[in-house]
Amino acid sequence: MLCPFCLADTKFKPERIPDRLAPVYLCAQCREQAPALYVQDYRRYPPVVTSAVGFRQHGKTVYFAALFYTLKKLGLPNLWPTFFTMALNEDSLNTVYENVRMLEGGLLPNSTPKNFPRPTMLRVEDIPLLRRPDWTLLFYDTGGESFEQPTQMVQFASFVQRARTAMLLISTTDLTDPAREMQRLLNTYVVGMGELGGGTREQHLVVAYTKADRLPAAVPQWTTRWEQLHEYLLSGTVETLSRPRRYLRRLEEVSKRLADFTAQELEAYEFLNTARAHFRSVSFAIVSALGSEPEQGRMAMQVSSRRIIDPILLAMRNSQPRWWE
Image: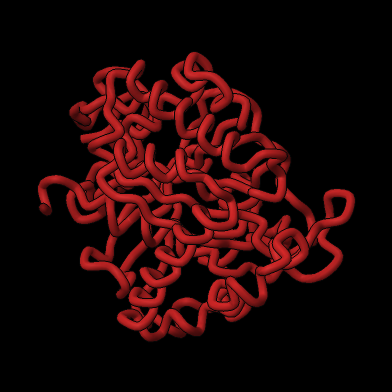
């Protein structure tokens, strides 16, 4: 089993400790206590290491908050009748509901410090868009400074080596030279993975363009040359998820169109070539976590997340555990 704390392959045996009525499951390596449901249901709900890779202030923490908000508040059980989510320990429960509460109140989560994070563990049940519908999502979020140098990545973001899908969150409107800076981020990631003893050729890559509500003002051709992407973003409500096959086909079409956008608009040819050479597959998504620009750390209007679920769907699709392949 994968320990969600030290990320070692280990065994969990029930152990008795003082003042506890029931046995607990301690990792044989780090001695951290894993949630009982994580251990007991491991094969039914295999873990997906979900790691947001990106620069500081590119929307990683807000993306996770908006994802929790979408899963809890936007009526997915009305579309997927047997769907639900469930946090697996007290820390995860507090993180999920605190993020939902903040976004409901127009507040944004604080920037994540540069440290090795404890995961937020969330079980998702019966997602009809996926061949395997039940998962345990392990969310790891660390400061963007951790991805500025390979040595920082090794120290503060070693969780990336256990992810079957690497998820890059990039706000192109926050970059001075997108092609150069995107290539540096990817180069740093590939080198860091090598230093961690892992290999990106066993990973899939999902590139999610964040803060996409800014793109119409930043890209003059956004509503003409990239009309399909513009329409897809604007129609990004959860209702379209009620038709799984159509949704997945559209997701693939948009991914190809975003690859064209990356080449033709951003001129990030080196980034594309590096990604295709070093990963099993490369997919693209576009998201707006909030739907509009915040003002002084607060939302001026209600959160209206768009396409927020797309990157995590791609990550889950690519992260099937080896015992199911």
